[in-house]
Image (cartoon, rainbow, N blue to C red; front, side, top):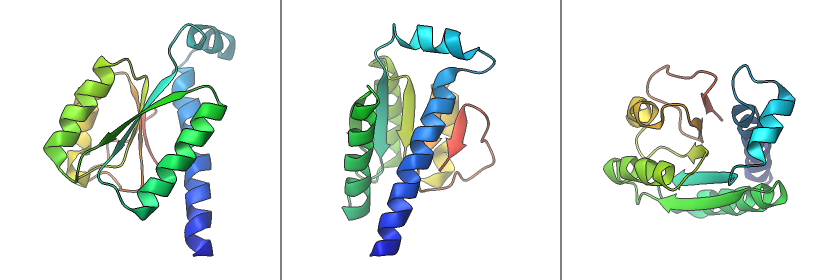
Length: 141
């Protein structure tokens, strides 16, 4: 059990570091990034493939840490359905989410998610993408 707890803590720390990197923007200076973020809603979209014990605990930890850093978290549960999750990606972006935290329902859908999100930041959680599409805007934790 301790090992799972350590993995979860490590994942939350890495996740929030990735969100900080994605949130600053590519090539923008830090002062400009901070200034632009103060005008934004500071919303994160947490898209989970399903609800289970580990993901529920991770969700609670992410929500707590995000709140401490001034972010609102919008939660989506795909019920292990890849098509539902892709619709939820569209929905989250339409609702003004600036960074998506995604536990893929299907690792093969990472390219579809990348095509949908455009310039939004994406952190893939706990399930590696099926293809090598990672870059400065899409990271895997």
